Length: 173
Image (cartoon, rainbow, N blue to C red; front, side, top):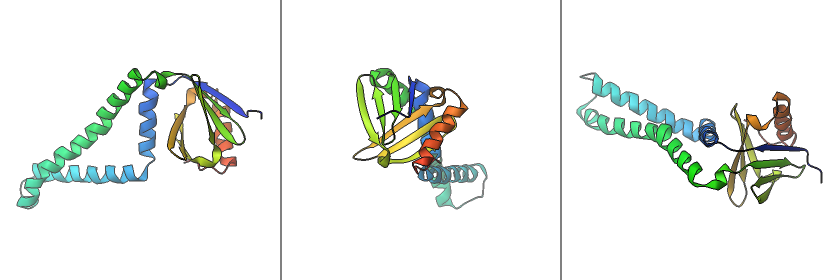
């Protein structure tokens, strides 16, 4: 079986952080939860700043809501990138070069000396995050893999990859 396309790259620490943010931005549940938390945070801030706004119960609850909302925002903006950075430093597997070989029936992903074949039938969707294409495979277990723009030689190759997914009827969002 002849490969259709081969891409190669070595992941960097920032790739994991950016890919996780792309996944979050394209997740409807994340956006809904983020909007609810933002509204709660703004409401709590208004209640605390403006005297006479809200009942006594709301004024007592507002600091808790504000702290919890800020905690969630800090977790997403600071702690997740720190955790991913530490994982990147401590796990050599995350730093190994990747070779993605596209075949008509499957994707062969080689990481170091290990290789896995992922059939296109289990590729649920591809998320186009601008700088990254994030592939979400769902079989016995979920596999997330990304393709940074630097792995594709130029805009033409990127369009070939996106066209390949569309030809396979794989949603690109």
